[in-house]
Length: 124
Image 1 (spheres, rainbow, N blue to C red):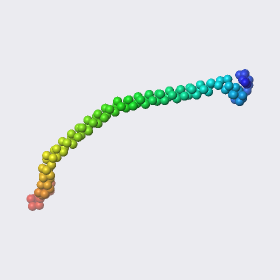
Image 2 (image 1 turned 180 degrees about the horizontal axis):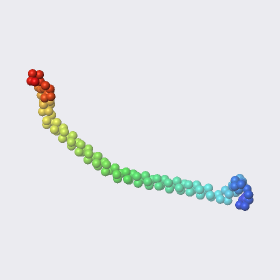
Image 3 (image 1 turned 180 degrees about the vertical axis):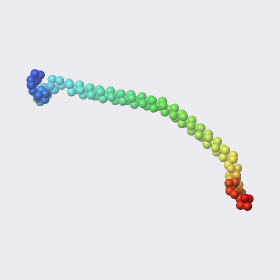
Image 4 (image 1 turned 90 degrees about the horizontal axis):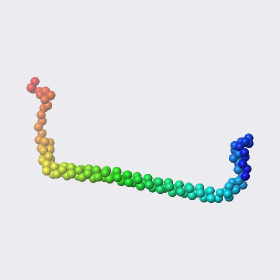
């Protein structure tokens, strides 16, 4: 295998030049290197998935804790609104006919009156 010395005055790209035989020889000397790289990659992927699952579980727990209070408040608000609607309907049932009668009486019983700001002819 060609390994140039550092004191040679050759360009850097020539110092990094390896032949195909050198690469193949390195692969034969270290056959388990690629296996270790693959194992490390799969181990890292597994750790990433575990971490992602852990964070997803934490988020689900957080969301469950904080939305349960909102559901309770929403149920309380709905119950309060239902009570108010019932009160309005009962008031309408009790006094509804009286209100309608008063409206009809006011609309049909016309009493024209001259406003105070208008001068009445003949009273000047």
